[in-house]
Image 1 (cartoon, rainbow, N blue to C red):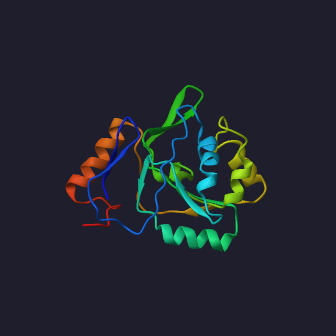
Image 2 (cartoon, one colour; image 1 turned 180 degrees about the vertical axis):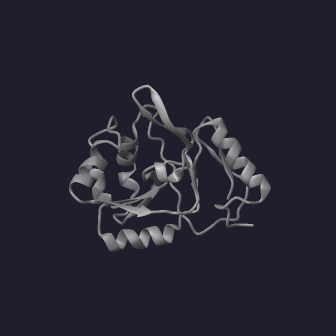
Image 3 (cartoon, rainbow, N blue to C red; image 1 turned 120 degrees about the vertical axis):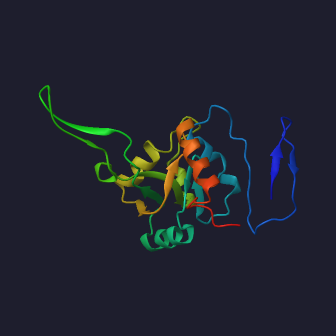
Length: 184
């Protein structure tokens, strides 16, 4: 299904072909932080685990496998960990002397939050209000209580935060080599 949102909040549907998905769009406010946004959708969650993403990452994460992993761990939140590509060269420095220089590799990076999560509704109780940042107090508290697990994704992942990121993703799509594209 393709659609547009107009300034008056109306939705225009351009195609009537739909997948068997339920999508709820909630206006959470311009200044609401990530935790507050999650808390505001609480009334739309049916009491079962739900999927959450920031929407600024593109990946070939196997969502079904991530859900299965979440169910096995029994934690309140499972986030997808990814190893980002290194972007800058690394210098090993001794005082003011550079002893070695090399291009950064994935091995130089640690696992980061890839932005795809499975969340139990009870995790929303860790969010105080609209000013709460999900990645701070709620996730830090869940981690300290053993309720935050990491599904390690070894496949494709790319953020889309900059013009450079956008151009890289568009180039992959135009080349027909977009690893995240499963549809025809």
